[in-house]
Image (tube, rainbow over the protein chains, first blue to last red):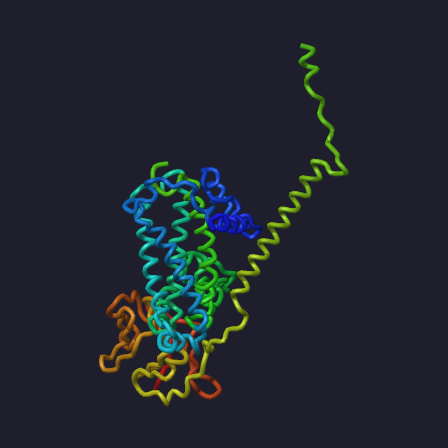
Length: 262
Length: 180
């Protein structure tokens, strides 16, 4: 009985299919463990060895990890919401109501919303922790800058997502928020230096070609703004953020592992 | 001494492999990078321009607001929804207030009972004249250009041209229409 079981096991482990997936066999030596990490596209982003301090919750708070987890949750729930939500003035608001009332597990939008709030909080906590443990110091200063950009992208994701329910709160919040773009130097209608940009009496920057217009696709928050924010929220910013996250995690590994002394 | 001199190598002739020399390599490399940079800049410019359409499906900034005689003394809200403008008539003139709060751009409400414009976002308050008196608004509401059509005597409002109180422009001839 036992020899036959061995035969079956061997025939599986020795098969071409098995070997094509698990290339180094049982990782029972240090060399094989390293090869297993390096040969896997997901695992190779992680350090081959982790310091004892790296897994101490008291030290890292796992704030960055929780932020990344929330990003994955938001990507997944956001993808599900996209099956129902239509980013037009006519449908946006009623689609949001239908997502709650007419779709099974109507809590999905709330998961997305609360997850987004939580991510904004955890990303700040992560930054606070990195600051307090001095983990921004050389050679990690490059990664600190990447982190700051990721923080801004998180806030922009939050900002663009805020418009999508297309209720009064959303419209006026984005009206107020996007008016800040008018104050951009040189390319904002009311920005410093913009008044100097003119040919004769004709101003080069007008309400239909300044920074705010580029953001809204119109002179006020309307159909164009809804569509632009939708595309930025669902595709544009997440792509940039995902790329920078890969760089962020890679640099954590290359700059002496997670936190702790270098 | 003489041996040391002998060691100084004679200047090498420009290496020519199948017609490719150092000089021609640099020339083509420079040309390639200049071309690549120019193409990138052109592509990015075209992409940026793509975000600014040639036609806007928004209400025009200039519109006919009807005959002056249809306006009673006070604030008229008939064009607020469509064009974002209040037409205000007082005893001797008519003027057009732009219904955009100068604080952060929300649309204020006209509160007839309290005789003031009040912004629901952060509480800025304005008198009927448009002058701010409460809340965070840093200046008065803007007035739009207003005139009477020479054809039919109707009021013509043009939101594209604004008249600002703090610049003393409210007394300009196109900032109001004189009423008998």
